[in-house]
Length: 454
Image (cartoon, rainbow, N blue to C red):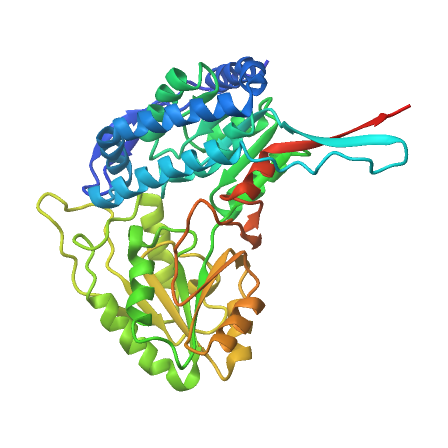
């Protein structure tokens, strides 16, 4: 008989102050078993509803979020340290994603029935997979949950939602409202640490949707075996700046890099420019970064582990470091997980700051001799989630966009997304699709039915 040690409460910190704000008892084997059992028990009823009925219930959940938006905002700020303005915008985006899938599930994606074989009538049924384990990160707790929950629930699955250890607040609140609007067990929140997540992946779930680090994704694949897995594993994204880039390019890249303190998988991290423009790029990026200050313009890193990781990569890098202006914090926001922005220049291709995702307010700058060299640099790292191209010549910009090996490319903008457009990675950034109607198939299985007509 396997025995487990007593569960020790975990201290959760306020990222703005570094002070303990509450404690969390992580889910152990009993809690995981109970959560999966509740979702399994609700599956037949939820999957048995018509698309119209599931849509109406999802819209009721959206209404609950929007009615209680200030509560969601407070909970999101508590765990992330985001500004109230950013948190409110992200809560509204999460509600919009759920609203989108409430409508998308009522569109018919099934191939038309017909006689594909002589004397036979055939059609395709799209069926839910079953109980989905959704493991989401701390950078956008509610929004990343909505990216996974929206299509999974709309397709008829039930979900056990495991939020990040440091940001369980909105997941617990959402599950409470889901019980009232969708029905008991349709969405179950399971707060906890990495051990809780590993137990959940090993439990009797039918699929796993994971957003997080590459190491975490590899662990999920090992534990999930032959079950369906959808992975989004980070970006380390390139911004390819061509000589004819618009005047606002560097300010826009820095703004995208520092949004959420750079803790966005699709944020620009690596600026790539021609050698003849390298020094100018460094100076303009440094000037733009100096105009944005930690505190007034962007928040802290989320937790001590991420702070240590960011500092360690910066310390290992062989870069010339140009920092932004001094920290400018509001009253009471001291001793938290704050870092000023960094520009890391003069880097070799194998520099740790280039090959690893810093996930903070930092940009590396590299140069190549020609456009083909820029493309090669962009594609040279293990991650392949997203990128941007900055230039005025449409033909050249689109050629570069076409040759970048990643799942999403922006031209003369960065980090702009909507529920209608798919998002997903390649290579070291995982596989699978978030957002758009395409994400519905991540949580469905096709079944072909063929009937003899005579």
